[in-house]
Image (cartoon, rainbow over all chains, first blue to last red):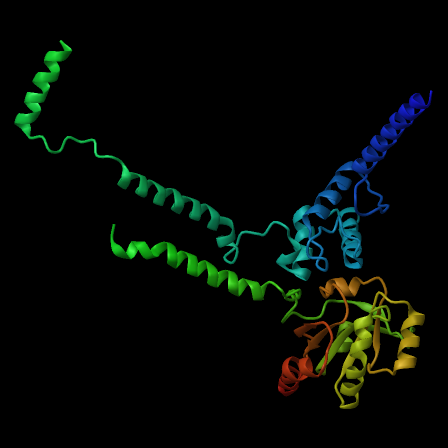
Length: 165
Length: 180
């Protein structure tokens, strides 16, 4: 009787824990705000831009994730631009760039200063592969029968040919 | 293999060490460069803090070299900076305040209690001017030349060192510039 009670209690606890876990997984950490949009596309654009823009103050969060006052302001501005001005992505991003610089972009643009960032790893990889091949080539065992002259080779062919046949 | 090639890995390693060492001291900067350097002040039309019936626009900031100081009564660092601003104001430095995302009452009380170093204050209640200025905190201070062009930005508190090393030389230089 007691045993059965304990068992059902533990099953109950398990259910509760699982439920709490599921709820906490589905809850998105971050920001709860109420914004109105004219269309689902605008809403989608809003969330996409918020993920792409980096909060200038918190350094390691997008403005979608941050509760810093400046992130709130930037979200409000993104919303205003989308709904009132019907701005496209590039316009909004340029607007932020003009004020906060490259820092607001999580994905740096390709220009003279960031070219090393974009292609550096690829160049290093190619360099590595090149060096690897050079080393492998140097260490490859010699397979050519360089020591044999014409006469030796003819003789060898004769021996081998004879055996083959 | 030629002998010099044996030193290649070491060279790579040392180069890498130097780069990382330099990076170690570079990365600690939390200040972002301003995008607005050498650009005119953004357009705005906002109220004055002490004379709410009067509007200020960017045009009103032309004519004299001035420091545009972004502050709020909610900002502890601004309180630290305040006595130094008072000192500068007494020396005759032009300081215009941007009262950034503040409540009017709190701001007025602040100026009442701590004294007022500002020529006047621009009320930026919703932070829209701040956004156009690329402000992301307070205090931030802009040096504006006679033509109303932003020439320098300092992020953080102004103290004796900052003033003497960064701001004063620039302020004085701007003062000598002639407006055509």
